[in-house]
Image (cartoon, rainbow, N blue to C red; front, side, top):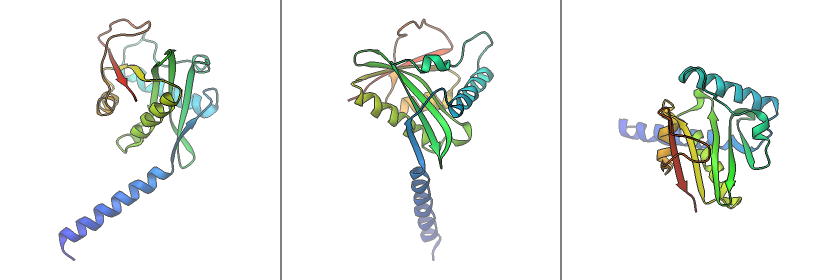
Length: 174
């Protein structure tokens, strides 16, 4: 078999393997008070603490995530929790993506896109047509993902104020 044929077979095999891996990746409604969710939220806090100065409040507390206006989603790979996300209805038709976390070892494999798609689908089902979010300027993977997903820079919203460490995004969803 020629080198080109070997490369083609290898590419098809890699693509099939990625599809099989995606089949075992699930995003579903979750309980932010569960042990698995708390562990992921603690990981997120540690990750953010390493990126940003002390004195900045990083993550959300469980009580905030249990608010009736918040939808909390858990991501699992082969049945093991590996990420979480949440969005909050701010007003009719508008929601804030309050958090999105995927373990660093799993980034760059398409799982973040699946989580973000699940957020959009759930929000759309809840009548949301506009998503807002804020993220830190040092979260390069997140910034790139949001931009690839059609989010555009926007102004501060809700109680947020301009901050040199924060990037604000917005997106209209159909």
